[in-house]
Image 1 (spheres, rainbow, N blue to C red):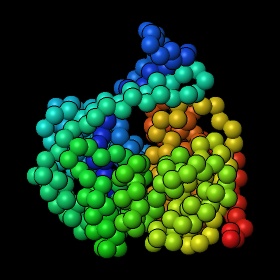
Image 2 (image 1 turned 45 degrees about the vertical axis):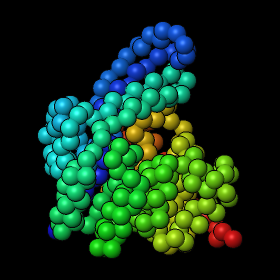
Image 3 (image 1 turned 180 degrees about the horizontal axis):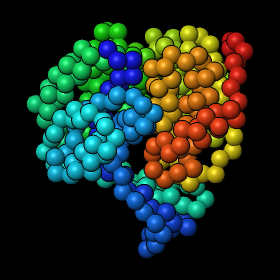
Length: 316
């Protein structure tokens, strides 16, 4: 079993249309200055970064058969194994409007509707892949036809087989998945606040909420905080990272890039300081570009040396 083999699961992939404009003005015509259309969805983004880093990646999930070409083209270009279950209809298109200030407005459209037969096909695919893979990244939202409970049952199945599941979602899917003991979870501060039922902004509040999650059987709690860096709880010990100030072009895919960085570090069995500095640098560089991906690994290594990583004192 190869050391660098990973499965990413994208239940609701999307074509990401990104448009740049000076300032978004609601209720009127807005002129887009530049745009691009890329195959995405959180798991697809994670897969692309991991493939560019050097992992052997298999992608699976549900894909609308009517607009699959941009995805299959990407997979062929990056040497990614295509294990998607094809379903009737088109995968969704998400529109991301990026203003000069750096503010991003997301317009996320509904995806495909999956049938019970589609669900059974994906479940069988996961069972088959689990025979040859130890690391799974399950990320993103749910299409119509998949309940949060069904998602959680897949995490439980993989967990019981000793697989390392990296999990990143939101809303009801996040709440259900957290109860299924994934190996690593990566909520951002807003998602963690939603889970906790109260606004969390200060570090002590985030640490307390993360500690509560860690006590449920989750080995790694990674809290992303944008420009404020990352908090990481593993085996009861917190580490924090702070990237240098970056010129933000787009925050699209930065969280997915962080997940990919943590996954790549685990595949390489790096120590905690190296892991966190690398994943933070990778994510920080992601905000300086429009497309998700590793444009220059030398840039990542150079930036990694500028990331401040420290072990936090014992929390009460």
